Length: 604
Ligand code: GAP
Image (cartoon, rainbow, N blue to C red):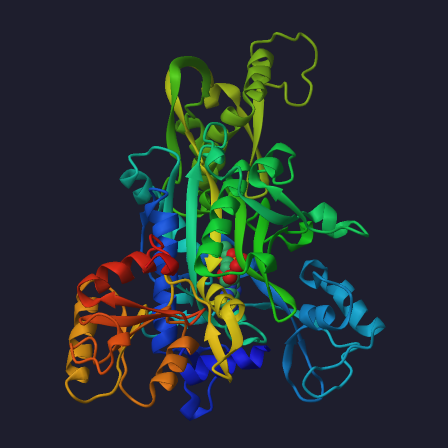
């Protein structure tokens, strides 16, 4: 089975297709057809159930367009770039790091400096993937991946389509903290579209320009909050830490979450906890665990915000692709928004007992500062306050000098003045005019910036991987069959209902059965066209786990005693194509139990 087989099936059966094909299509944008939209919804629901509901987190839904200052603060305006190289002959743009990875043994060219990538292109005489022209000597540029737009008419308020859903959570932190009653830890999730103007979208859904992310931002107190590691301690997975990647004969190794925490392989217990949760979740939606691993980012590969990061990766078509990232973002994001915006992005952390501390203060005498420093006086006053907090000893030394404690010639800084800088200029201020004092204050707590742990999963990549990993072929009744071995929980349709043929009242009865199953909350498709074998094949190809056939026995007109009890239908299971008869009155309950994994088909 090749990637072409999956893409062909996806288009033919309505999973996904390139968007706007009538106008030639545009790279990196896909429309999910009826099967794909249902599969996507099921995957998202399952993620929501695991990462929001079961973890006790809150979910939000923020806008996809945000104003420029958000991305100035987040670092995306300056640091969210890929390496672009343009072909001098055909003008096509390519990702320079991908050209290197595809044509050399280098695995993570993204983490290399631009100059080194230029050197590798020249050394290996790498060529344009489109027209074959040599790229040696072509300059590589940093290309920012954000889509820019204007908010409102004119260009006075630039905005950007969000490149990650995370920022929509971070910017609302002050209010979200209120909703969480200012208690750490608390988690906020969001599922939504993100946009990246990828230089060269490729491999259908795996690298696109518009995609869905499912992200959790967990806000913690790094000194106090600990995850429930015990609940995932026995979860096993292959781990590929940076040390193994850098070692000459390094390999991924199998270990439990408990072991990787104990041995320090995964340095942050919170990250390890979510690796355990995610492994279980990926398995539940149909990712093949023999083609799955966790890989740590190499130093140069880390995003601008991450202190450590592990990726969940799956093998698809011979390559390892990133399904999700598990980053320890420390206080980077909240610190940036705290500094750039007018709001506080801190949490008040109560001490166990109040503590008394000395607090240096100044109360600048503006009747002295005003005449002396003119327009700069107010800024000088602010700078004095900042200096008192940072270096109170400067004031103490100046006070001693001013009181004549040293009878000698005053040394620099000991002449009764303190020096502050405003806009690159130095101002000497007499310590008396600063009115420096040290007060004793009793404090009940302090304002702290929470740290952030972020499991960030891509839904489109998960969906494509599940299709690829569940694609099967076998032979049924001497004919080759293609089917998707999807877990019932995520399959677009749970039950196909067919009349043996659409006559003698079989069609009406089958439609009634379909309706009853829908009322029981099952996702049902009704099909009466073509031979019954063809109908089974159609459902197999979209991964429908169960098919129900209404025949003459169902309506009490069996032609032959072997056909089972009157009032029963045939239920057929997709993978083994095994069949059994079930009374119509038990059908909905049986199928719900089968879908929810509470009953196995053998036990029906
Ligand atoms: N907030 C963190 C963040 O955005 P990321 O690793 O850049 O981290 C998270 O993205 C996930 O989003 C990836 O693991 C991947 O599954 C998905 N993703 C990122 N770029 C994508 C693209 N161009 N096409 C499809 N999925 C993408």
